[in-house]
Length: 377
Figure 1 (cartoon, one colour):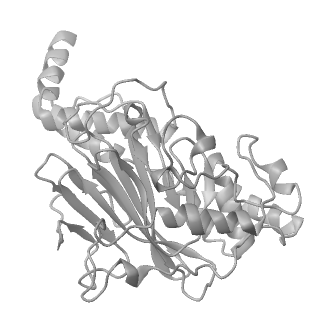
Figure 2: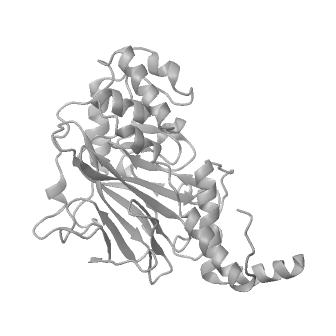
Figure 3: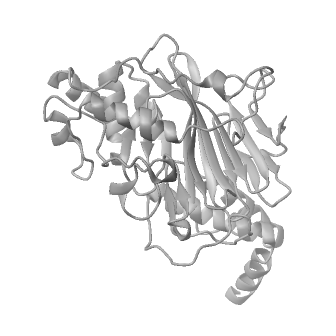
């Protein structure tokens, strides 16, 4: 009987689409538990179909926004404009983020749109300023409709909708970008979470770092300059936050000059030009329409926050089950802005990468042959 099950499963998994689904399931499983293997040497093409992407790493732009690089460095990036989060050397994998000012806040911005190059296709999500004023998801300059919560790209990639707030864009290789819609101050914004195989190390660049295994050199501007010393931007006046957060998260006193250099030099180097933009725009608008190089008018820090408010922010983040590697951003948001809604945004920043959906697809395929058989996951 075991041999017959094995034969059936092998037959099913020889299907190109289902082998890719199994690969996506494993990527989701790995990223959900943050289990990372040692890097492998050989690089693969984002546009080649692979059955099982492995050794994944996740970068993030979440909240207002906080950047977690592929190598694990954390910093705040409160700017307004359109930026390159990450791209591969051949530009077949590229993610651009649009950061916009939060209404009535002159020092706070969040992601309102994201545009991606999936090999030879463009995919965009717009929770604000949609090109037609209403459509959320776009492919190659046109709004899309989902059939069975999935939209297939001709090159073997796919856009998946888990629910009204969670979407995943998948490359033919199985590498992907998870997108989560969040609500802050009565408006919608996006957490953006690229997930790539570690065999793409040393082939990435952008705000999410160079993915070389060393988080100390992640603040490298375009063309290699400027390069900043990698220091956390979560500054505190007392040691309360240092005591509460994991030792692996560095928290330092920083001067405004460092934040100015981070945003005006390093950050501006990764602003997009119109010719390299992957976004779709409302009539009469360009990337310049969404840029404000003078933002913010002041840099938010925790230097003026009392120990009591820091402790309260930490308790709020812990109560929301915020993962340790996002505690710094969560505490910063609540203590510096007074908006407790950021705790939920941080708690949900870890990607839920189509695990349930892929499991269901595999289960349905197996049941077509052996009714009632359950997979062991």
